Image (cartoon, rainbow, N blue to C red; front, side, top):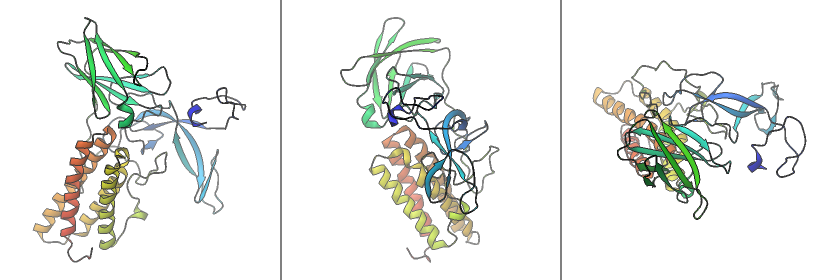
Amino acid sequence: MPQDADVIEDKPGNCPRCGMRLLPVRLVSVWTCPIHAAVITDAAGVCPIDGRRLIQVTMAESWTCPGDAKAAMEPGTCPDGTPRKATYAARPHGNHNPQHGGAFFMAPDNWHHLEGTYPRAGFFRLYLYDDYTKPLPADKVRAISGRLTTADGRDIPLTRNGRVLEAHVPQAALPLTVHAHVRFDPGGAENLFDFTFPSYTTDARPAAVRTATSPTPAVPAAPMGTPTPAGIKLGLSAAEMPTELPALLKGLRDRSNQIHSLIQQGQYATVYVPAFEAKDLALALESKDAAAPPAQRAVLDTAVSQLVRDTYLLDAYGDLGNEQRITGAYSEFAAAVDIIGTLFPQVAK
């Protein structure tokens, strides 16, 4: 059963929880970005998206052939003669790394996970995750409440801010010890988590955004089209990139509309998929306009640079579930798309 996927045995048999027959699984240790699971590699390094150091996680590895949903447990050859493609699936409790430089805990229910951070004097932030270390959706966060107690006896309520809980701890000196009392359900029991901060926690700053005119950063970039555990792709591969202006413009508009639809549905965590594809399309459009008059070229370069910056903002705000900021970033993103469209009036919409 999906809820029992954390049960791992070393031989065939039945699940000790639900009684169903155990299924084989091949577990591997791989490296991925702290908040961008689309990047998967077998070596340590830094995330090509935001510059954070990669973290080591446990995932399930299998191999598939095009058009065949059945996964094999070993590499091999497909009926068409091509090698099977390795795919990876996230596992419950496969990632217990702090995502924002704080202290990470699993709750007694084995499902909720928390990370406490103390990024600056007097400010405590509590991130909330599921058993895959994915941020909890807003509706689940609304059911959670809590408070902090300090060593000197103060009792401070935790307040919700989007998908995190926060508290101000006045007159707090380092090292700081606080106790978080968290209820995951209204009227439920309080769960106690002890946090000690010898220094302020540090959430790695995103790397500089790369545009078509800026140098490539010295980081190991993941190949475009790298599949996520769910089969989603990060950007467009060369084979998927249109070559004609009408198709490029249509693809850019379609992705912009898709982002708008996802935001309206509250699916903030998936906005990065069409956003990164739109970024690739915009950069391709920029390369198509090399012979344009200098004034038009300057406008296009500015619009594309704005769209690239907004792509990374959409990705970051989507991970945080911050509706206000993701809506603002999309407004600027859509404006950049409109400007790019007006620079190619010869192409029918």
